[in-house]
Structure formats: structure tokens, C-alpha cells
Image 1 (cartoon, rainbow, N blue to C red):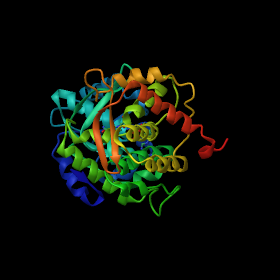
Image 2: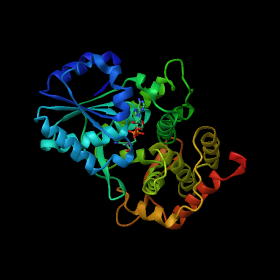
Image 3: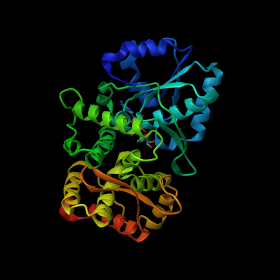
Image 4: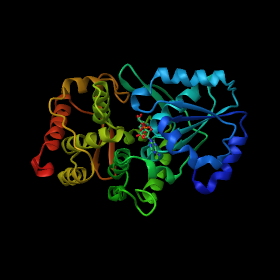
Length: 350
Ligand SMILES: NC(=O)c1ccc[n+]([C@@H]2O[C@H](COP(=O)([O-])OP(=O)(O)OC[C@H]3O[C@@H](n4cnc5c(N)ncnc54)[C@H](O)[C@@H]3O)[C@@H](O)[C@H]2O)c1
């Protein structure tokens, strides 16, 4: 159930049907977001605050959440409300789904990426042994509450990370999304037109309701993620800053390169994306990144079977194909293509 500002009464009723309410926040969403939803009847709720950042999406943080639930006598009719970006909704959803074999949870996404992707669809989990989302369960939130006001305090880099996932919908579903852009510091009220957010949520909800546990069409949502996740994992392991959507934005260029080779995608779309990327996203210097280490990370990707590395590619805009087995040498070529692009003076100057 997706709820917007006008549906707040439904949310109040949902909250009232539980014995005890817990709010999960990170230190930023506690500071910038909680006060915007003061009128949600949270007076008696217990706050649990966790440190922000992907490096904390781990088992230690889950244990901390469970400890707080136990200490405060959470029972099976308790409710956990996750207020934050994808890190908070992923880990909160996971903690709730395992606590006493599962208590209800609600997601209130506060980042763009959380709204249009992470909070919707029921994937929950944590990183483990240096691998992204290695441990987790499919578990649907009782509701996802979308309030655009949160975007006003979201840093630009985080907004861009969310925008990358919106652009992804442009390649796999509808080119409508390729027109989405940020107007920073602010579109009349928010830094992006809400129509793109609403439509993206509709798409994600529709796809994930059809295929909740990713045995078929839901896989298309992983476009750009095979290489994107590997870059994100590798850079975080090596203490470099990268956002989830930044990895996806780079992974999409490699995926377009492979789409030309394996699915006959017209080269004009790769050129189009190179222009869009240079105008929109951050430049990374990936020279010297060990490609074999990236391949090793990709081999652990949950989408693989039997040792092959599988990709989501596109035949054309809005025509994705999933489970495409790509040869390691072609993956290496696609990463080198990305690295060369990020150093191409035609796009980036000297
Ligand atoms: N479950 C899924 O289907 C799914 C899909 C995509 C991504 N993800 C996961 O989502 C995570 C990334 O999510 P994210 O990009 O939202 O990152 P995030 O949750 O780490 O949030 C990014 C940063 O923004 C801060 N922040 C959030 N909202 C804010 C606000 N309104 N004002 C000021 N600061 C704010 C956070 O404290 C954090 O520092 C990754 O772990 C990724 O694996 C999950």
C-alpha cells in the first residue's frame, strides 16, 4: 500500500492497530526528517537511532536494533517504522521480518532513491562478508508513505543517486523517464518534479507485485546493477566514497555497450547516454581499478546460476532482456569502455 500526504488518516489507523511503535532512524533522518512528521501521533513511540551509511548496513547494526526491541519489550503486535533512505528501510525491514519471526513494518523513505526504489517492493537485507545484500528476505511493508518534503534537505549527491535509478526506468520501461532532471537547488517546491517520482513508484510497485520474489520480470530492475554493484562493493571495501546510484549510473553505460554487442541495441542510445551522463552525473577516475577483482565480486551476484555471470540488457528502449550470460572477456571490455569514457576529453575536457 503506497500512501501519500492525503492518506495520513489511513496511516494513523494502521499505527493505532499495533501495541507498541518503534521508529528506526539514522542520525541524519533523526535531525532533518522526524520533525516534518510530528503530527503522525508518534508521541509514545520508542526511537532507535543507527549510524548512517552503507558501511553500517551490517549484522552488528541489526543486532543493535534487535537489542533495542527486546529491551523495550516489543511483542508480535509491535510495529517498526523505518524513516530513512534505502539503508534504513533495507535494514529495518530485515530486522522486523526476523524479530519474533516477523513483526509489521512501515517504510517512510526520505531519500529520492528510497522513494522510487528501495522502500517499495519488499526486498530487505544487509551486506555480509563484503558482499552487497548477501543476507536478506523478501518481506512486504504494511505501507510505504511518500512525502516529497523530505527531499528539501537531501544533499545533491544523494538526489543524483536517486535520479540514476529513475533514468534506469527510462531504459527498461518507458523513455518518459529519460527526461527527468534535477532542478537544483529547487524545482518550485522540490528538486525534482513529483510526477517522475509518482510514476516511478507506480512502475516499481506494478513490477514487484507481479513478481514478488524475482523469478521473472522483476529481474529487469537490475539493469546497470551487475557492474554497478561490483563497483560499489569494491570502492566501499577500499574506503572510497560511492553512492548506490552512482554505481548504477556507471553500470548502465557498460550495460548499454553489452546491449549493442549481445542484443543489437542501436549505438545512438549509448551516445545519448554518454551525453546525459556527462551533463548529469559525477565523474569517477576508475583507472587502475583491478578488473579481475570486479569480476570476482560479480561471480557472487545473486542473479547468477551455475557460475555464469548474467546481465539485464536492452534490445531497444523499453525492451529489456534478462538472464543474458555474458562472457568474462566481454565484461572486461565493457568495463574498459566505461573507464575510457570517464577519461575521454571530448566529454570531460582535460
Ligand atoms: N530494497 C531494495 O529494493 C533496494 C533498491 C535499491 C537500493 N537499495 C539499497 O538502498 C541503499 C541506498 O539508499 P540511499 O541512497 O537512500 O542511501 P542512504 O539510506 O544511505 O541515504 C543516503 C544519505 O542521505 C541521508 N539522508 C536520507 N534522507 C535524508 C534527508 N531527507 N535529508 C538529509 N539527509 C538524508 C542518510 O542519512 C545518508 O547519509 C543501498 O543500501 C542499496 O543497496 C535497496
